[in-house]
Image (cartoon, each protein chain N blue to C red):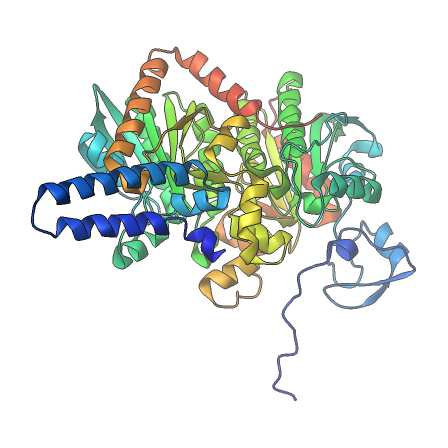
Length: 283
Length: 314
């Protein structure tokens, strides 16, 4: 049937296959559907060598990508999640946390580090989608607030790489309040004229977008990352229409004035270093 | 679930009986019977409302007859002038903003506004603001700072509007900007959750020195329906979600998110809006008197620390 739509609507991405490339020799690109050598994709910073599609990058790989000589010191790793609400859905929150810890080797959805970017001391915090969809609970909020306060104390810039479905339901209202907490900490950093750069990666939605993701002095985004407040499904249910192609992608935000720069992963470090140079106080 | 939502049914029956009695010719007997029914109503209302579940409170918080932001403005203030528009795109009727005289002070008012009848509901977009609503609120708060007026914020929304236009114009950026600016605004801010405190759309005017919550109001990271749809893949399990997320005013106070719970009359705010608004007015006055004389730096330090402390981790 020649008149049939040749492109099916994009299915919600499966975090298990897209946040990290599964063990195995081959994998399929979600964009161009090419079968690729897993090793080749990994060597290419998890960017599809055929079409340039950006697979999700684990947080530690992101740190290696951004810091000089892949060297950095992890900070605030001692901040661990608890279960303030004794939350239980189909599983206990405590059990869920433990499962993700086993799966990812991390205790929550964020990794903060200090190191040098083009020789400039910088605090970088990276969200990890592989841990409960990068959701922001108390730990993510606390680590980000401490990162901002550390940058303030060290008089250096702060960079946050977002990748998150939004606030973590399992910590209820406390998760929502992390938005205010982190934004306030960024306010103090800004008042001291220290640069804050947000790097938005796929996906950045909900309470993360409605707080620190949108507060960068400069806002960079990886190509075709989903960035929005409400998720596409919620919007479609609200307006009862299918969304236009490219809606809520990085390029869409660039066009609408909410992102400064869309950069590929290969150019990311150079672009970031340049922006930091342009905004940092003269030496 | 139906039975759960019908907790007001016995009250409705008594109220019906009372108005029926009131239709009879006056007599000592009628007066006695009305008095008896009223007593019964108060007692039962008190009993039912004392034991509301989190989900039932959510329903009460959404009750169409519950006092809305402008009802507070009408009863508590004089000389109110509403400001319109964000000076960039348009005016959003889902948020009202302006200045008014409250007691001995001029205050800035920002608040979500729902509609009472269908036409008004649609005009107010069911209290779901678009970006220009948050930007209007921001404009008025910056004016409040310029002219040294404390800000009273009234929170009552199921959330910011999840629509295409809302996204295009950056509702996330609008909320984010408010969080940052409110954390540094150099005048006192008191936020009162009068109905639904729905997620980022609520917090977007909710960063304050003091956060008050009405007794049967709720404040949550996502609506119980939304939470249920995601966690159980079943919206109908909103009851469980409301319980699990601990959305009530008492919970929020215990978690350090609300500073004070303002009592509602028996039968809830919608049973006696005037008494409810009075209670809120009294609380606002007490907190304004406390915050107004504070040096700005101490005020801002306190506000920062208040939110800085929120969260639970090991």
